[in-house]
Image 1 (cartoon, rainbow, N blue to C red):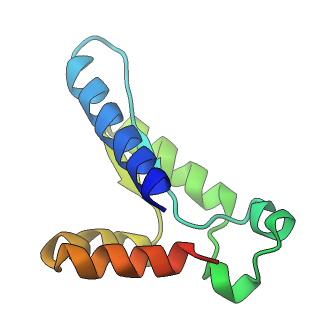
Image 2 (image 1 turned 180 degrees about the horizontal axis):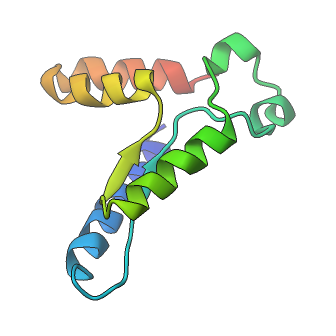
Length: 107
């Protein structure tokens, strides 16, 4: 879990830094935070449908990504539930957020 969480954090931080560094150059960088997406990954990995939670349609995720890119946003969180969790998490105790995230990802 630690490696997964750290890699996600790195990608988001790196993309936000690229976004800032390339501002005004015509180059755009946007990170997409999609949550579980219906790509077939979970089925191949043998993850039960309920364990992975609600899965977003890939077309919806792509629309969110292109919208964020067009609006020159540094990142976008796709889906109502994901956006809600992303907004609430910074206001909760870190220990609670991390233990819940680990439980969610331990399928």
